[in-house]
Image (tube, rainbow, N blue to C red; front, side, top):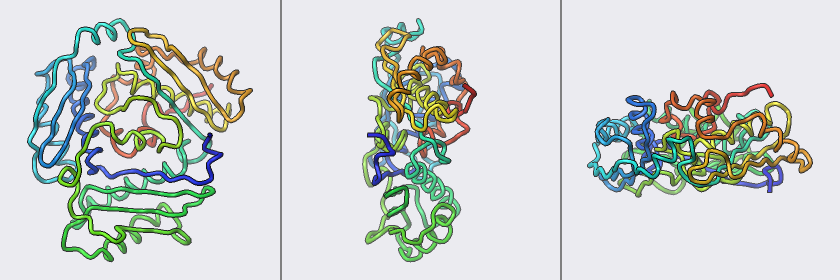
Length: 351
């Protein structure tokens, strides 16, 4: 089912202090620190946060290249939390088996990735999904300027016939604050820039205080917010998450390239809606499968042949075309990997 066939849908986004997003950001901050020291670093980071504890696991090419604990705690404090975490570092060196595959330009794993775009003014993304992320970003920016809001929170939007039906905002806050005051401030200082509230069922911290947040309230895990990272669950998602993975990992760069192609197909008026799917097998640089789906089946077969001549999906070619060795990945760990038109894979070219 394509998005245009879905009159009613619900999507969500989360604030930077959501426990899963904390883990995503720390994973990408560690990745950035490695790439700053060595652009060819091999990194695959997973974080698990609970209470005041953070477990960091995964594989890196050099265990001693950066100060893992400092990077993790600096990121945690920058998000807005006040106490440092107790770090358990379980990182190991990357296996020779994986290193051999990627050193020859092959895929470091097997997997399926998807990219999507739809013709609209919201960076070619589903309207509700884009809006949820923009409101989440606005809430984060606002809460950093006041002393009564804290980092954790969620945004949920229901869209009916391309009209906002309901908006749910949940924001962590200090204990001694009126919920009515929070509602007034959010409704007056944030929402008017993004929605016309008339006729919208708006719930802001409805029926509940939200004092405890982050790891003290719930366990966090890298890669658990993959729907926030991609397309809100409205279209297909591949088997892998993104954060903490260096540019040799096809889970990440295959999805980036698929989005790049889908967006440019739509931006060049070759289709109104486009989904690109790509699959890899371990050690092989060439995709095991590459296909395209648009709103017109007869157009899809023609475009499938076209994209194979215009776009090179081999991992090293993707890295070069999208300049991924020079990207700072930490910003992608908040508000979706495809919402910012300045990201390299979001650039529009002529076809």
